[in-house]
Length: 443
Image (cartoon, rainbow, N blue to C red; front, top):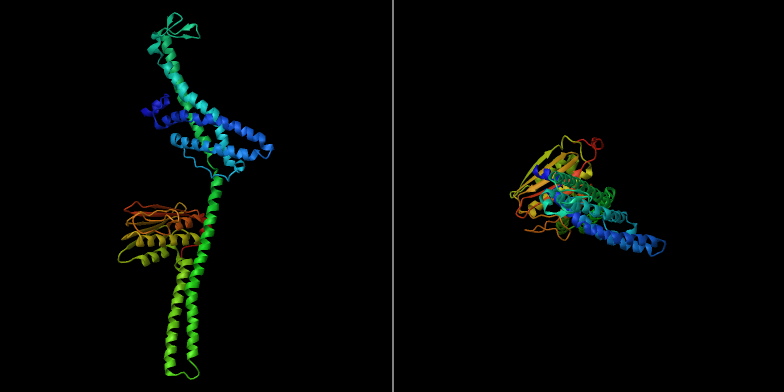
C-alpha cells in the first residue's frame, strides 16, 4: 500500500517504477543512436532509384536490428515485457523483410519518445523535487534585494504563503510527472509488442513450416525403418524359408531313402521355425506402425502397455480420467500418445532405474494430457539429437524424437527431471472440436 502511494505521488518506490526510471536514463542512448539510423535510412531510400539503394538499405536495416536488440533487452529487463526476436533475414535481403522495417520504425519513433521519457521521468521530476523543497531553502537565497526567488522577475517569493504555494505547484508537477511517466512506459511496452515482436501469423506460419518438415522427416524415417526391417528381417526369413523348402523337395525324390526323409524333416522343421520368426517380426513391424490394441481405444491400449512393461523390478500404475466418457480422439493423436507412453516407460525402465512409474492420461479443456512420472535417478532432458542424455546414467534416446513427433499435431512435451529424480514428463496433445470427433465413440 505504501509503495503504491509513493508511486502515485511520483516517487519511484516499486520495482516497476524504478525500472521505468532506469529505462528513461539508459534508453536515451539507443534513442540518440536512432538519429544517424534515420539519416542513413533516408539516404538509402533516396538511392533506391539506383542499384546501390537496396543493398545499402539492407546493411542499414541490419545495423538497426542490432539497435532494436538492445531495445528489446532493455524492455525485457527494465519494463518486464519479454518480446521475442523475429528470425533474421537472409544476407542483403533485409530490405524485403517486414520485421526489419518495423524495427526501423521503432528506432525512429524512439528518438522523440526517448527524449520525452528522459525529460518527464528525470528532468521534470528533479525540477519538481527542487520546487517542492523551496520552503526549506528560500531564505538562503537573495535576488533583486529580497530573500528567495522572483516569479517572472517581478513577484518575489519571499514569504511563507508564497513559498508554500510554490511547493504545492512542485507537488502537482511531481504527481503529473509520475503519471505521465507511467503512461509513456506503457506506450513503450505497447510499441515493443507491436513493432519489435514477430506478428502472431508469422509465428504460426513458421511453426507450421517446422511441423511440416518434422512430419516429412518422421515419415521418411518410418519408411526407411520399415524397409530396413522388411529387408533384414522378414524378407531374409522368407528367403531362407523358400530355400529350405526347395532343398526339402529336392531331397524328397520319387523314392526317398529313410535318411533322406529324416533330413527332409529337419529342413521342414527349420523352415517352420523361420516361418514363425518371420510372422513374429511382421507382427512387431505392424505394431510399430499402428498397434492393433489401439482399435479398442487409448485407455485399453495404455492398460495393455502398462501390463506388458511391468516387471518384478518395476511397478506401473495407470490412471485414466475422461477417456471412456469423452469422444474418441483422432487416430493420429491416439497413436502419438501411445508411442509417447511406450517410449517414456522404456526410458524409465532402461535408463532411470525406476521401481515405480505412474501413467496418467486425461482429457482436460480440449487437450489430451499424458503424464509419466517415475522415481528414478532423473537427469532426463530434451535436447538436440547429439545432446540427448541423462546427466547421471546412460543416454536417454527418444526424447527429442518424441518432442518432434508431438509437434506434428501442435502438441508439446515438457520434462521435469532434476538430477537424482524424480522425473515427470508431460505430453499435451490438442483435440479438435467435439463435433469433429463425436462419431468415433469409445468401444
